[in-house]
Picture 1 (cartoon, rainbow, N blue to C red):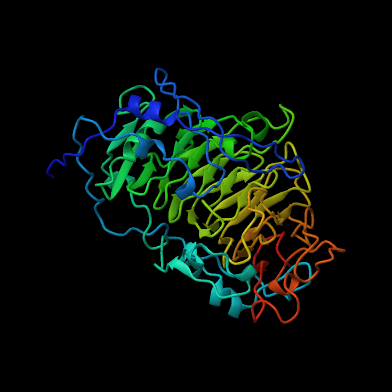
Picture 2 (cartoon, rainbow, N blue to C red):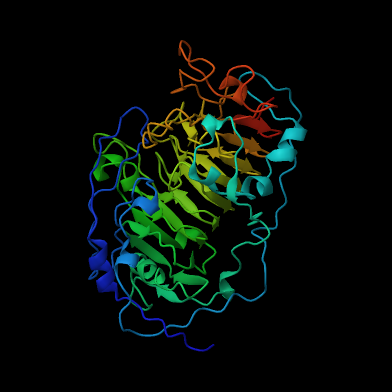
Length: 489
């Protein structure tokens, strides 16, 4: 392939540019363990040791309104040219070959354990339909409190099941990160920073050699940036680990605690890697959320990735309330013990293990904490997943609903939290007759403005007054034909 004469910014120039931004913080509330805050002062990069250190995330603020990121601020300078990697050989490769898990027994719906009909489950809550459209909602204007029609700017029928990440053996890395210095970088962060300037390439492949990479890492947003694939060629994801140990208490907020922050506008991919936050909960007073990954990217794909933590392990967000950022997790593993899959993003989990840890909170915790806005059609969808737990777990909830503190005042009453679990295997640790937690349930809704009784929102009929809202009612929290000892009997 012919050389493309694109000039690169040096890592030092990028690092210096990254330290030019700043902001303030706010004290998180202590009742939920998962709060948000605006950006704070950037942390400098320790180049001598190759440590991956992130610029503080922006707390979900719209990137268009944020200060210019480092890649935009630093103009290309004279430097080496680089060839764009050729596309992988072999064409489209499925994300996995295992079919959808067979449907469990047919059960009747109940007020505390809503069950979808086959018509609704297969008519709307499939992987393809959940991911078919997204990004900007109603041209950036919140649609009438969720009552009016909703449009999406991207109606692309995105299908990451059919078009998986591919076989890493067929990838040609643009950069190779190796802790021992044998690659092009010792730092994932600096490889990301250089990749942001390669907009002439459709996709940049960054190979990470086995080892532990300690420190916070940021992939910033940039309109002209290429899509990025971060991968290991080792099929054992435990051999390649990105890890840090910050919490809301030590870093200043849930957002700032993230080990890996992905703010790329779209098209990020990751395969065969572990992302962990090994902060020891309760070792510092204050907010105990400790995020392994904060994700704000649309069309993001993850295959064979492990996310390790306790509180707030996987934070699936979007860069503003009117952006429906879609992500797909296939053959992954997520663990935690309280509200460990959280946020307002649209996320599909396919053939993924969700493990509840018991060493700290053996019973009564919630797995997910969705904050889906009422006008976004999809929150979290779990299809053909396995819900497991450590020894002694009991009375665990599938989810509770979260109104994110970072949402603007005008929109703060609109998060309802949406989650569907279908064709999955549920362990005996899950609460039997009422697996959706009322803890923190909203008190006021358009249906009950006086707020006399806490409301766990199962459908839009529980949220809107009679005669208002979708017809038929839209389910917010529900299951469909799951199996296992914790399934609806």
